[in-house]
Length: 547
Ligand code: ATP
Ligand code: MG
Image (tube, rainbow, N blue to C red; front, side, top):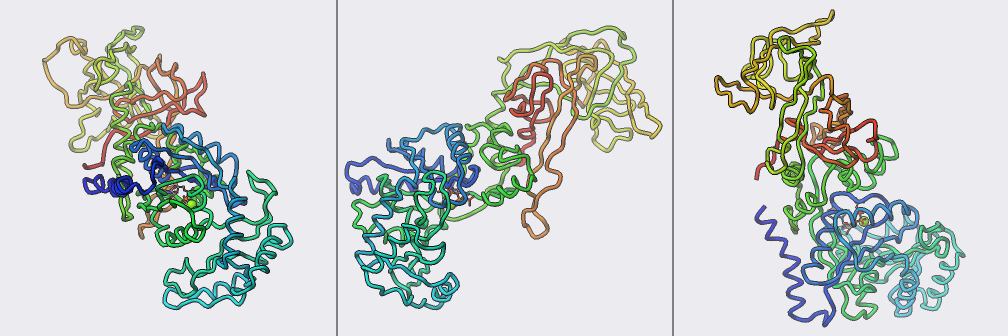
């Protein structure tokens, strides 16, 4: 971890150097977050967002939000809206909000200049032929027979491509670089293609679209980006990025710097895969609480603080690696433990009858709102002869070291009394349906009783005042199979018809609590109504994360 935290500086070291040499003159440091609006943002994007925005902040620079919307078919306004909501929710404010598609005319004009310089040509090889001509990692490619087409003819054809005279795939515009380059990206890459498709921003204005490797450096340059931070898979594309701006004599061109993508255990982060889960209804939607999307994490109950803390802890490295998801879970526990109050909820209820407690009496017992924060005060809970406990807290034949309820054993009911289990009542199938217990009035919590000790403390709710709620516990959406490949976990959602202490009837959507002994929960923003509360498990209480 220490190594990685230090590595944060590798980008900042480059910026420090550039500031010292006044590489960008008086310009402010300018970064950007450039999502393609073809899906919802995920936790990997959060890493890129935090890096770009906090780098700008550190240098009193600027950070833009830019939609990298040069591919007309996969993009959608719904995604545009979700991206803005997610960046804001994480706590960042962009300086400029731009669409790459607003630069289509400039990009077109730049392509014309490349043609005029003899640096681009219109090619009519088919896709298959082009693959054959490209060569391999060990063999150089072959030059296209159209490579030396006269400039005038290139200009005419490119203009006609733009005017819609040709079908998709009939022609492409290619950069004229080097078919023998050891870097395949430099072997006369395609920079424009024909696509008769309606674009979410420009409609039917264009039927030719620039390729990513050509468009991206121009988008950065137009916005006067100084440092263009992107993930490692673009390292081999950097020579092309630089080539485009150099051939266009762009002054003070931006510098691309690559960092490692975030990979998380038990998590798949490809937008394509996540979209398939949504489309095939394997999850509720993009904001299903099991999804690694920002919207999913938000609905799950994660806080922006926890996600930013996580991004800070993982740092920025030059080499790809996989981060243990338990670190993310650690961060949300750390954030919530001093913020939220505790409540008593029984997920899988088993009835308890206290046979020596007056049948029609109810008394109030006092319980602390937070173990971590005594200043959060106490509240009163009803206690009577009929209670619910967790079915898990009873064993007819106890295992070794089981200190909870079993016939003959005495335990503490949290903030109430010592209670002894005497008898388990079963139905005709042998299932335990009720526990007969007795309480010791001397042992009332807060009375100063020191007569004897018990090993177990369990939670409970008063049966007569309990509020029925729905509780959703989650397991990882993805679990590795025997080959270590992530597969969809069929048991990622477990729903409980639970009983809660009376106050939870007042919970409002988005409110978070610790459920005593269970974990952290949030009232679901979509499913919670005035009459019925649905809670999502944010995270359990036990940490498997080792510092
Ligand atoms: P996906 O593969 O999930 O579709 P993408 O890279 O195509 O993701 P973009 O919308 O192009 O998604 O990403 C916007 C920015 O976020 C890019 O700069 C990209 O490098 C960065 N990014 C995407 N995924 C990750 C990740 N897992 N870790 C860090 N940065 C990421
Ligand atoms: Mg991408």
